[in-house]
Image 1 (spheres, rainbow, N blue to C red):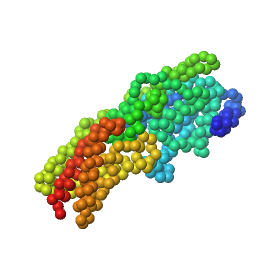
Image 2: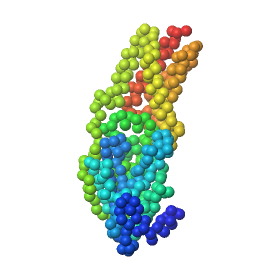
Image 3: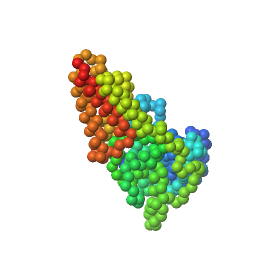
Image 4: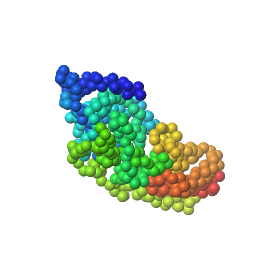
Length: 402
């Protein structure tokens, strides 16, 4: 590969390349630093934090040299201020970057989070080449990459770097556990009911296929555990890839996750309450041959907005595992149609057609879950039933209206 050829040219200039630390307040090495250097490499795993984007942990690579250079290479950096960041984030075109900084800044912003460092049993030449590559990769012209949550992130990138200079793909022992991406995600969102609900809305069928042992490595803590059992052959001898391990920042093994969402604040509790309110009002509407437009307006407006997001992530975005998504059956932007037709004269015929069709689609959405293979969030069902009730009320009301 052309990049590997360029990288090897950098090996002869490694001491000069390492002067990237000078930009962070260190002195430029003197002539003694041009002598052959001894290197050490390690993988640092950060356990979960309390924020949503911290729930899955983080991974850094650390390189130390005998001239005193001690650098961290972080593949989890992104720039909120970049042009059209939020639009590109929703679309799945978020660019992350590799950033290098001195190890003394490692713990800033990670106070209280457990950190485990694993020494990598690579040769000095392998680590020297790895260091040259990482320094090059952290330069502005090379540092950006297209982030993919499951297959190309701050955990898989360091793993790929290690394998490149190990010279072979790591074979991870099968732990015998049959899990999907959604199963793994739910382990880390178990205390965050609303975040889990939102994730289940947006990720689709592909997240429910059983994944390989290697695919599980998208989570830093799983990668850390798996590396402990990896063996390599070096100089004709079999040895462990991880030669040593230590906790460098103490903290709870489960991380800094927040307490479990109280049951009465969970999506299931909230939407069951919504269903109860909708059921009572719908029964009164049918009895009085009335239609509570204020309720329909609120319900359909919310469904339209969320439906736009679900359809966008399914049909437009390039995020992993968001398409196909069976949630497009019951959450769609077409809920705006009955809102508009409320104010259109002689629109009753079209309203009846819409509500009949939507009622059928919602019924299909309810019964298709066991067949589709996509695992639903249980809080979806009271929402679907609420929407069905309002279609029934509208159809009943329209029969008695000229």
